[in-house]
Amino acid sequence: MEETKQLNIWLDGEIVKYSDSNISMLTHSMQYGSGIFDGIRAYDTEKGAAIFRLKDHVKRFFESAKIYNMKLNYSEDEISKAIKDVVLSNNLKSCYIRPFAFYNDSNIGLSVYGKKTGVFIAAVPFGNYFKDKDIGIRCKVSSWRRISRESLPLKAKASGNYANSVIASIEAKNCGFDEAILLSTDGYVAEGPGENIFLVKENKLMTPDESSDILIGITRNSIIKIAKNMGFEVEQRHIRRDELYTAEEIFFTGTAAEITPILDVDGVRISNKIGQITKTLSEKYSDIVHGKDKEYLHWLVSVET
Ligand SMILES: Cc1ncc(COP(=O)(O)O)c(C=O)c1O
Image 1 (cartoon, rainbow, N blue to C red):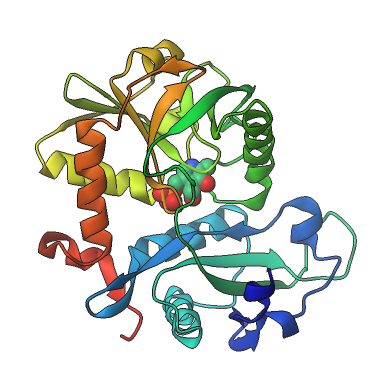
Image 2: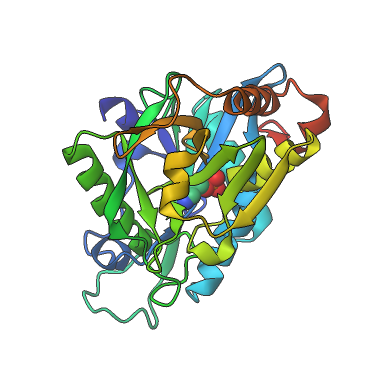
């Protein structure tokens, strides 16, 4: 926390010290979960810090705002530039970047009508999201179901959706697991609280499809493309809970989680060590994000450009 206070953030067009930045205590988005955001990573590459799939993240950020009818005062290009500026201004090489759009208002009411919007962009040093990422984690199928697409628009990365993620994570951790896996209301595997999920069986990859109440992750999309280019078959479909137990390998994907192997679900041992396909994809992904794979350089944008 002390470290974060020393960082610069971008707040509505200006780079300011995190500790000097001010927004209303009564901001609607803090009380009612009406913010929208994205999560992006920059990686250290031979040519300095580079942001992974910046355009896609910024596009999703604007789509989230559009779904919530939130008028942002900036263009996609302006936000992309601001993201680079905030990384540069903090002199960060590897970091996690959080653009956040919110209703910045002191009116306590629930209505958003006529409220001003604001945007901040924070960039913080960031390593592995899961302490045991390199050895594999243990997950619990949550007793909480993933919010349904009939209750909230899941295509939007909106703060309100994350109450569901937080409650599932709390339960999993209280029960001694590293992370939760949520099922959709109709009982199919959906995703982790902040991660998409992949299963491997008989050399084939499987991941819940868009109708399984998931956030369409950019890492998920990257892994589907990478795996297909490597010659793997990838199925996007409904996945039953018992398929988790009989999978040969399971892993999470996400900007924060990157590729995190799951070795155990509900106490059922999936594999004793990280599976070969998970390892291969994880190494490939690491090369790609660090700019070591020529084929995927178009997914990286230097912060200096
Ligand atoms: C609920 C949820 N699912 C999946 C993901 C993975 O998405 P991405 O790969 O775009 O980070 C995230 C992270 O943003 C998330 O919050």
